[in-house]
Length: 231
Ligand SMILES: Nc1ncnc2c1ncn2[C@@H]1O[C@H](COP(=O)(O)OP(=O)(O)OP(=O)(O)O)[C@@H](O)[C@H]1O
Ligand SMILES: [Mg+2]
Image (cartoon, rainbow, N blue to C red; front, side, top):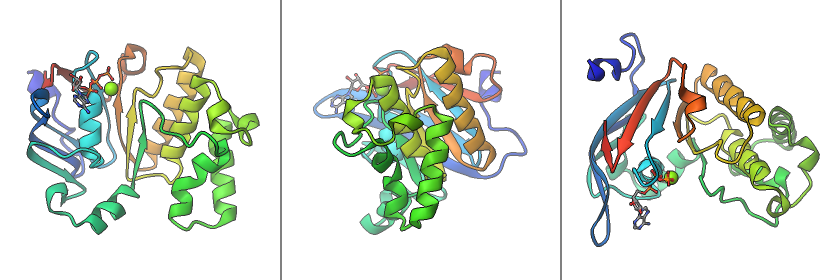
């Protein structure tokens, strides 16, 4: 029964993310993921839950090729990550937005510059960049911070900058690692509304979270990890 519930909707489009029997062992012997299989359909939003140390961040790192699986297959948009050239990996990465659990902002650059970065890599015009960054700053309630160095912001503000950067180029796949960990309920609502809007516009989204308030009562599928295994 549970398995049936965890299948993508019958009419769903093909898988955008396919994880097949993936194991990740950090040397020498930390088993972070054990034989994990899951998929997300193109345009789907799914939650990845589980206690601290369950392997959520590890799974997201494998999906953006920041880490390599010890065993198993990962396909993104039909591309087997094991068989892609470095050049193809770079190209694919430009289509994946990642909001890291520890933000990974460039602290001396302004909020605006941090958010603009993925669009600059894609040679978007200055006008397009300005309007998209401004839109995101407004949606996340941090417009007045745009000229401040990112390192001078509160953690909740930095978290929103990391989310805006991940969302900036409306990625094919958005990976959000504990995106509301530092936010109050109202700000969590702003972030979830942004994710829903990106999802409505076609982005596939995976949200790793402990925050029950953001997945309870939602219609989206939820994958639960415990000690590296999917339940
Ligand atoms: N670089 C690493 N080297 C060795 N072990 C690691 C490394 N990164 C993670 N681990 C271990 O792998 C396991 C899974 O960690 P992971 O960060 O994926 O968990 P998580 O579910 O994201 O936890 P949290 O909710 O605290 O963020 C943990 O036992 C962790 O200690
Ligand atoms: Mg984590």
